[in-house]
Image 1 (cartoon, rainbow, N blue to C red):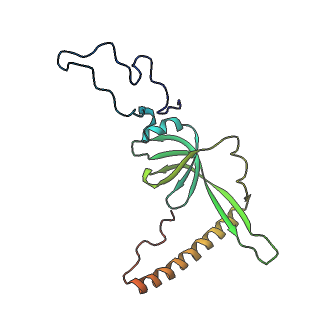
Image 2: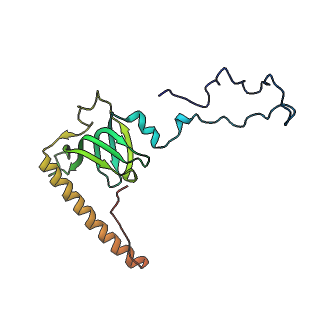
Image 3: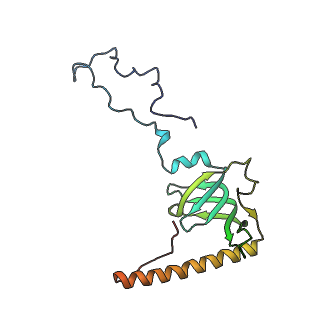
Length: 188
């Protein structure tokens, strides 16, 4: 897709802004035609599901509303931005705290193959194309870990986060009254 902006020159068939066209008017509306208002965006720049056309058959990274990170090749989509991805992997990131004062925390990641994946458009928080030259490199600051170890640490961190959120919700309910709904269900 070509990169278009408001500052691009107009096509040669249309008169430039401020120039009078050759014909001064017509029988119904005599006089010069009214000048156009602000320049309009070209139709290619609209942010609709049609923008996915350029991303078809390319490798994408999706971040979902619940925090999951999905890598896969976009094969199909519809007007609601529901996506079908193939060769999909779910990537987990976890930081394992240091065991003592001298050691550093460990930053690990792992990929879990998921196959063909259907994602509802309303669940997509972020979508971007993956640079294939850097796809095989580990994320900066992370090292690949054992799937079981990373998954276990992720579940433990999620459980402690939910417990802290429940305590925070109870304190908030005592302070303000009422009840906190759906607290902690959506991360972003």
